[in-house]
Image (cartoon, rainbow, N blue to C red):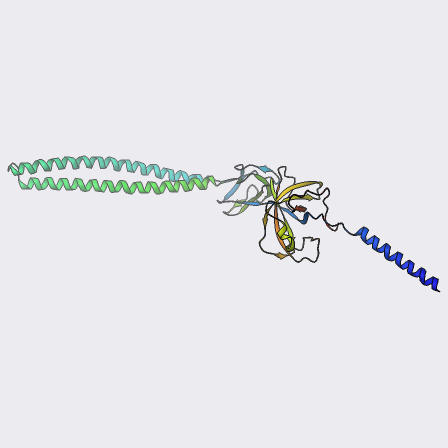
Amino acid sequence: MRSAWVWTAIVLLVIAGGSYGLYLYLKPAPLPEQVLYGNGRIETTEVRVAAEVSGTVLESHLVEGKTVARGDPLVRVDDADLRLEKARVESEIEALNLERDRARRNLELWEHHEETAERQLTRLRRMLEDEAVSQSEVDQAEDGFREARARVAVAEADIAAITQRITATEHERELRANRLARARIAAPIDGTVLTRSVETGEFLQPGQPVATLVDLTRVELRVFIPGRDLGRIDLGGPVRVRVDAFPEHAFEGRIARIDQTAQFTPRDIHMPDERVRMVYGVTIDLDNPDGTLKPGMPADAWILWQDGAQWPERLFVPGS
């Protein structure tokens, strides 16, 4: 009987030891002390291009996935009406310039009459002193001088008014030219066409989306760090990132922004410590000159936070 109890105890100890050994064997290895882990999705800055004038789309060079340079044509809107409006305004300017030229010639004529009338009045006044002319002749000369002076003032006012009209019409011409230029929608940045929102033949309204562009040469990854680790990281700190599509390649990055306030852990974010509820967002800048990283890719990130520390030989996801 005693021997049975001994064997039972031995078996229980063996089972317990085996279970503990299996636990140690299967227990995920901890992260190296000098790195922190986070995960998220690759993000880009999207530029939504919209129409600024209304009209029918005559040409579209939009191809999703196509690389474009700043200034490349994307869409051309029917600009026939805009051209006619601009031509009408230019004709108005030409007519006003002709009208101003006539007013200037009229001014020159009346300035000449004013000078002549002034000389005549001066001569008659001297003659009146010698009683060589009558007072009525002097009065008549004064009336002629006053009329010429008034005509000069009217001509000057006409020229000023026409000049103001020309200035206003030139501003209108600039507005028409600006609207005409906006009928040709060009790429505002160097980037890639992410989405195409219009087709040839569609009628556009001002503000209607035309396309979405992204700059894939620089992308971001937003990860989340527990509050207890926030003091370990700094702006500019080195980061290595991996994505499932290229598991053997580590992309180099830097910490660009750190949130100032905590938030609840997003549902789609895996935290090594499942008990963590409040986290801080950390944005990582990644160079992507070949466009390898695409928006929406799941990614894992490791932050090297210890000064002077080296990257470990192997980076792995905690709990994997």
